[in-house]
Image 1 (cartoon, protein in one colour):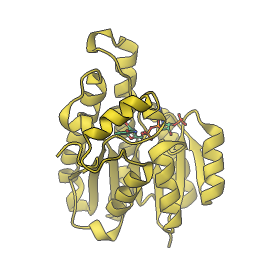
Image 2 (cartoon, rainbow, N blue to C red):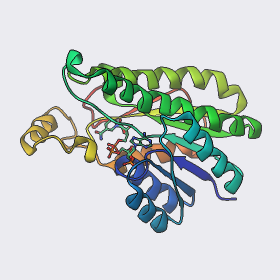
Image 3 (cartoon, helix red, strand yellow):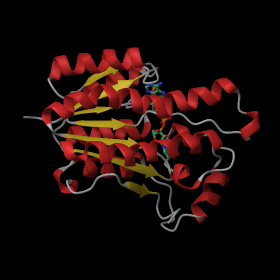
Image 4 (cartoon, helix red, strand yellow):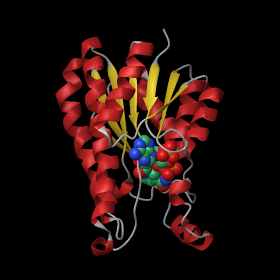
Length: 239
Ligand code: NAP
């Protein structure tokens, strides 16, 4: 029976590359999106998967989405909590609204989806949960204080949940990407990118595919003895 994966924020960037790679590897792919409807529908057509709209920061919308998926497919084997936003700026200049939005999507989005998927995994005594944090959640970034704090929360969540649900056959891991070329990093100029590359031992920025490969590994049986881990995929930018 085909394995089913739900990838949040899969309409673009890392999530979209992950959806494509999982489809190529025989998974039934569910592509969650919020605003990029056309992109999500095109990807669903390409991968033979299903595109489903839900704002992950809303517990009502995520509840609805996961009920729809479990009714239709009967199970979710793998949950990839990837949806995220970043806001840059000096800490005291970030508005209260943006502060809340960062935590609502990057942290509560992860909690909302996991809470609703977990009972199904617990019943089957099988599941893989892979959270997408950031190297800034590991080290902290100037002018991305809220984002760093939210991504650090995802790391803490991964470690704690792994302990709680490991005895029930569920592995929980986290990928912490470095500098990956997506819409999220499109604000950097070519000059800035070149400066960043100088700090990366492998000499290049990452691609969404680099992250997708790690997520696929963490979903596979090849990683069955790995749980509660934070896997840095950053070209050596932080070691
Ligand atoms: P991206 O290209 O900006 O894509 C973000 C994705 O998240 C989109 O598919 C977007 O969907 C979705 N999303 C945003 N808000 C959402 C919401 N409320 N509900 C559902 N989906 C939502 O970003 P990316 O670079 O691929 O980032 C993916 C993840 O990797 C994020 O968690 C990010 O923090 C993390 N990350 C990225 C980098 C990097 O360098 N790019 C580095 C470290 C970590 P819609 O367009 O449909 O709204």
